Length: 425
Image: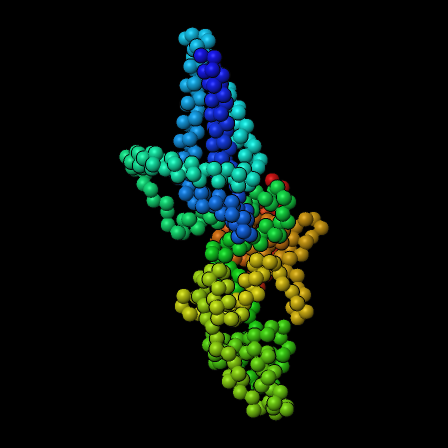
């Protein structure tokens, strides 16, 4: 009997250690960073690879851990009840319940889980080799339990369908967005860098119509002009590629590249009348305005092209888009020595801004860290017209989304300049 009283507490202690092991393992394996473990596996860490393989079997892993944890907890409680009844009689059941609740809660649940949360990667790497054989041993029981669980869920109309690829992709993107938001607060990520990461994730939701250069602002070449005027226009332009039209500006017959023009005129030694402008023009590439940024970026890379003309559903020219335009959506404005130094947004001393009407809402949000909606309009003028439901006159002012919009200039039906003031909340 004395030997039993020595062995039973030791057995209970050992079972509590096993319970702590299972509890900590569950927390570490579910909480460890998947990206960090993947990087470690790629670097040759075999245990990280083992952790990733265990996590791929998520249902089996959790079922085995819960099964093991419940078995050792129940067994430890049963042994403790036996010991306390031997000492105190029937009241020993209450004592055993109280003592084991405290021991299990503190030392087998809270303590190992807290430690595992603070050291998720090291704990996950440590427990993985021990859990693999445990999962194998418990697999028959786990399989039986999973069958019972699946049948029970089906009775309530819950199937085992995990969703299609699109929903899985959306879930992955949501997880990335959450990680960006979390770490931007914890690590002090610069707002510009956060915007870059968010923009990359939004590339499937933004159409070319939101970032393209509108046809009103597109510089084009009339092929009916004298050759000398065309040469002067192309070489004097800040752009290396210019659309070439014939008969009317909607009829784009090619794209002139400044380098191709230079190569063509050098051998002529000044006799430019022999130059065939249409012959050196590149074939125009037309893309629909509903194309997403990600699709267009991939198309640019695949075709090894930097320039495309944007058309609507009727084939009418809407504008143009370049590879630089898409990159600027991600990294911000890219300027070189040939770009025109024109500021479209001016900060005023009273805290307001004066902006051109064709400035995009996305650029304004990026530059000023605002959150104006861009679902219904691409430009700030378009937003005012959409919200006001009229084409406003100069001097009119509107308040919506926490900002005051005052119309300063207008050309015909186009709003060209707006004062925007952020209102105190």
